View 1 (tube, rainbow, N blue to C red):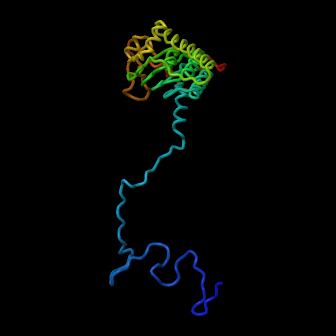
View 2: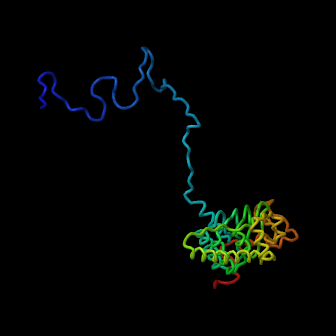
View 3: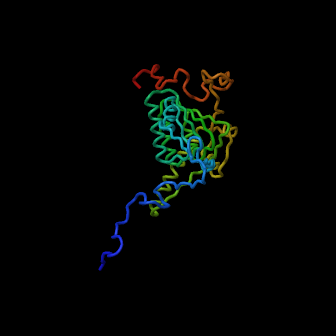
Length: 287
């Protein structure tokens, strides 16, 4: 049992948040005042307080600049307006669907040339065959410009394009795709047969554009044959080097056409095709 105090001041509740009452060493929240010596002037306009130490540049906060416009999407849209499609990395089923959608959209807008930029591209076998099927039905001529390392089933996408050119740093690897199966014995046998049919389509397409036998292409793929640009041209995988195009309004970049350039160079639209759907002035609005 608690009895009230009979002597002294009665019990007082503990004070809530805020400065402690009465004088004391803790006048309240905030920095504690620095004691001054007798005769020392206090801080003011004429006598500012002690300077704060300079901040270490290594500890300065990092500011991340964000582009509200979403520059990757806007950049790809600008390329699509010029009928240029970028594909890079590993082409799986989802990426192949997006690529096919872009190609079909450009095909619906007209029959002007399309440039397919292939940069450091690998692909899964079913995904590559899906893109190859779309390239077979696109009405406009498709020019593939290969750069970096292009290997495996991605070579089938290159072979499905009407024109094939390579940048100086391109490297082509003829190799068999890696596939994995899981399931019952019957399912494994069925999937193995499906993979064999898809491989026949892949190597048959490469053999068709290179003018070689399918068995030779298959043998080169089994030993992972490496082809640089001159060797790829001799092999028939690409037709030549990607040539530069003169850009209007930028002095020093235009160059006269060399013999063997084939006029168009990289297959991109001519200056008359700069506007989206510029070919509609030639084939009408029925496209």
